Length: 299
Image (cartoon, rainbow, N blue to C red; front, side, top):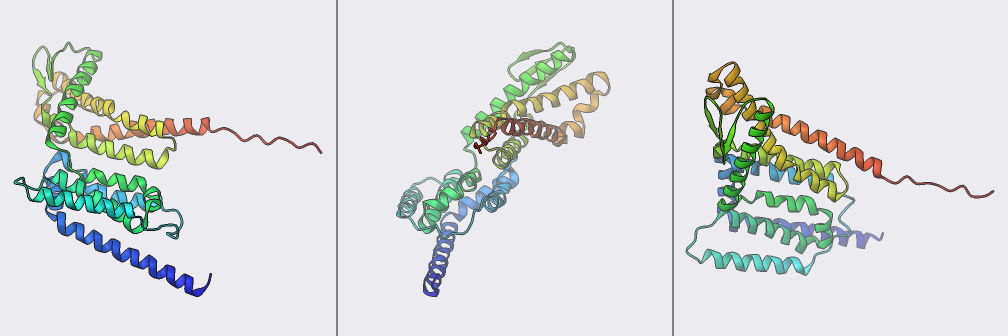
């Protein structure tokens, strides 16, 4: 390659990098309040703890999926159009009487980053890093209505799972919504007992593991879909364990650390079951790979 062409590619590449850094800094200046609020939620709310993991995980995934250099990356006008739309929408929103909502702010921020990537490096860069880039949308805090609905569903499913395990264990129990009634006491699966934090952590872990170790999208989607029943089973197992110990050995277990802070034990059990399911799916992919049969040519 001629020295002049190589030098021109070097200058163009660094020019794109400079523009990307400038656009990134601009986004922080515009949406810093939403960013601060999102990380404040991550530090104070159990339902948003996973936000702290998303950015480092996304960067790590981008490095694992990097293929070759950036010679094929070219800027694309679609990115500039996306940036303009996000900026206009945010300015209109800022002029309203509403406060900066962290969910909308983080959604706009991540979308701005995607637009900056397209504007500076083109659609080929987006395709090359599609999963790590889209994974950044997990930085967006769940809106209150969606979070409340998810917690309610976890409460109901956990109560059903707990009742199922208690019946198998020979303990008579009746269920009324999230209330489990036994002979000597009742258990109400309250919102704080839904284990929303560990369930979201399990979901994030499953998405990353599926991306890294599975090839086919149907298996990846099936693995992620298994998170819901597995999260309910995890909570049901916790209920069953507490009831068994409380009724047979020590009624004080309901005020113990195992009740209030023992969720990590059952989270690790759910992760182990998810890894087992992942191993089964991975082996099925290897089994289903068609073998190449080389036909012998006649001599």
